[in-house]
Image (cartoon, rainbow, N blue to C red; front, side, top):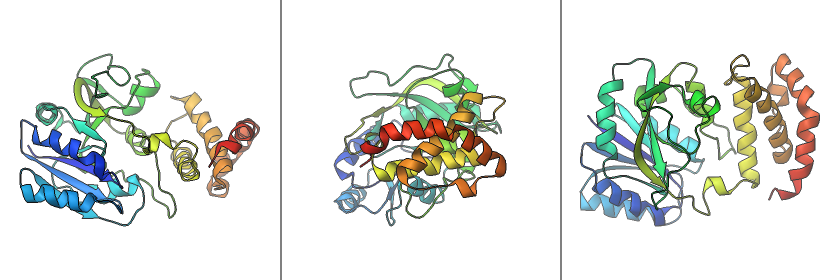
Length: 295
């Protein structure tokens, strides 16, 4: 069973070798490493060309203008030909049995129409688990319930059925370079579950120039405002099931709209505008505490 490892990257050439080495160590060789270079100006292209010349694994490389990780994923997923795809960032790398493990679980989920993919565990390079394990192994559950209902913590390794992920593209807008993954993963949860397994599949390193370290940069808060707008517009968290998060989305939308100077108010429905205005004073109070921290 063929697998694609989709790696969006931007000026991260210094980290890619670790991922490459982990792919060479896989027990199975029936996979493709698909790299989407999101406009890098470093040595990424030359590095990948050298890997391709070694001819040890199948590598596909695409270059596009810089648009953000979410646009690179959209670009890449439309070029995947395997039935399952794993999103592995440039500064992450796989355990030696990761793809063998995914192949094993693929047999379980491939005919299940309600299962979108497989979630596994991640760890730091010192083997310390990131977040918590799942309360059950081989657990069929929605991505949203994992985090919001069952309070599982930490980033997980994600492998999706290609045909499903292709139907849930990230929203794009000129000038927006960041959209958080819950915008898609949790929207998918309205229709699909995932198979959550307590197998360690990947290692992660949170680098100083990574997205998660850019909390108060203007581009980041612009992306947050855009992301929360889509969570509100799509009713990603239905009030009947997630009332707290349903309401907090309006507050976060208002906070990040104020911080970024990007307003989506006029694009909201009438009922959404009413809820937004109800919580605007709370949002403005938080904004007043944060506004001087935005770079």
